[in-house]
Image 1 (cartoon, helix red, strand yellow):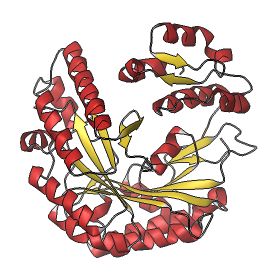
Image 2 (cartoon, helix red, strand yellow; image 1 turned 90 degrees about the horizontal axis):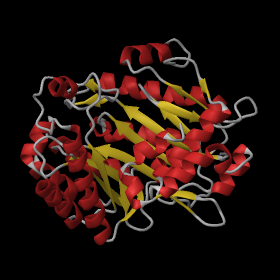
Image 3 (cartoon, helix red, strand yellow; image 1 turned 60 degrees about the vertical axis):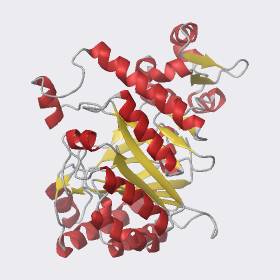
Length: 400
């Protein structure tokens, strides 16, 4: 998809504690130290300069600082990043609101910095509450407890951010359906603008994967029971949040009208995103040489990333991945289906020369018959049915 704007993602890998279910590119760091923090921010800004050959000339649509725990940075460091990104990609209009998101974990340190982050230009915070239940948080290996989460939500409100988003995990160890229902009720009572609900997945190579293999993780060992539990929690989340005035606009995301995440939607819509920092991914703009798009990744190792920057070049985890037509078509479908509005068949045909039926006619017919996919009469637009959203991975596999 051709687009003259850009979303910028900045990865800050440092975490006070690495959670046992996490497979992100992170580094344990109880305290950064000014030299280490300044050195990493300097590297981010140098990488930004060097990426302009590909991304220059675009207007800024969104900036997202994720991790890791980016709120471990000093507000002055966040201000440096925000200012540099604005200078590199001036917004299309002076009065245009650019979404600037910072991920925050509940802790006394981070709460004290919230006003400074607001002054630095952050207008949206994504708070990793995960649960308000102490036992669930303990089993997840989280550093905070429920009361810290509650105090942090209130502090975000007091700091005056335009939008507050809360992250909740479901299907976690020791988490029953009533516990998750209470988490949802508490989240709704804080009146956030946005809520994300993520199913816990056991990723290979994590401590949770090792514990699960040994039978030491407090989750159903029967896969069918685990699926049943996850589906029940997913259904409760949808009913509770939509009943409270949120709209489910993406498989894991609910928002009040006008507060959908601009940045996250860029990924589902295959729009350009510049990723900066250790382990960050970039979705590069379409060009004559890459008519179906390309992407690149930075090293997941901190020393490798910093060494690449210090050497005067760009840190690369491997060669640029240039998408072919088949891969791009499949991704266009399954990414669009993550969005509740679904796939625009006319736009798809403009990009790929024919509507989806020309490539997946039997699969689409079968999925429609099974009640997993809805095809809009006359347009060929596709979207998941409520039942299809519950088994979205299986549906999307048909288009890969």
